[in-house]
Image: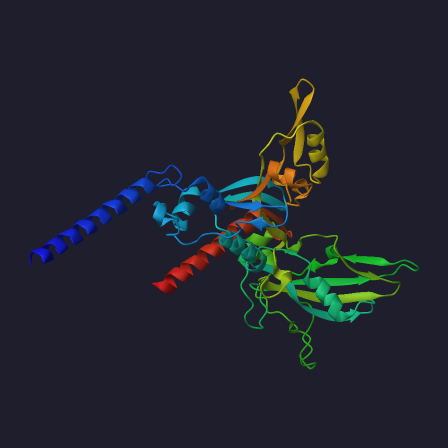
Length: 394
């Protein structure tokens, strides 16, 4: 019996000693300066927030979405918390047709979703149906209709309904007339988008199926069913509808050639056809971050400035006839990596990075909407999508 008690006692002592050792080891690890609790080590924080662009290829390009990715270091990686605390928009440049702004504190997936909404889901008005009465130009009817469809129409689509059925009314259709003829002998006539005339009362072409025996006193039926003139509506009385740009070339007519047609514009989105897309280019890039790890001076500094094609670097005078390279325009960096391809020494002296949560957006409007309105409409659509997901999950 005594031997059994002794064995049990020694076993308990051994387990207790192991537990003490584990606790001591854990306490030692927690107290290490390299592994701070409550914040990430600098090397892991760098991988989480930066893309490191090497001479051959970028590294650390992935993002960590899982909220518990760093739970062992007592660091919360919740995207929603970071988004609410850090998200902001800074407008850098705004003109009539272009806008450059920074989105800070956002995930790449959301940034790309915003870009795709701008391209394909913000509605506009575009020519969908073309009724050609006469076309003696060298351009085929189908090509002419396609060119007309790509002309941006300056009309607020929020004031119109989708033409879900074939009934064209003043609430869902805009009608333009184009009737030009080249009368000049030996010269050609350029037909441009400014020749498109808005018809606020609707179509003027009679229906082909209309009974020819109909009394002349009755108003002939046309391809639209307008109950009132669009000009009488207050939103159009002071802002008439027209092509966004008046100098878009439609066709060139030779002597005696003629085009007579009606063009009917309806509401749509770029997902259906690119003619409804309200933007020309819309793109983004991560904010470049360029760090000089070593001083680059004198001839090497001049060489660095000459290598960069977009003039990111500049030279400053540090006195006593010496010069030093500085980073003057980091936003202009296109990541061509010419500055670090001159040899290993250059790659050790220059660090090219991208911030994963800082995006430079550039939007160019087709002329339908001002760019700041496009951004607002895209945010509304993104908000509607989020509300729809939440309602479907609840």
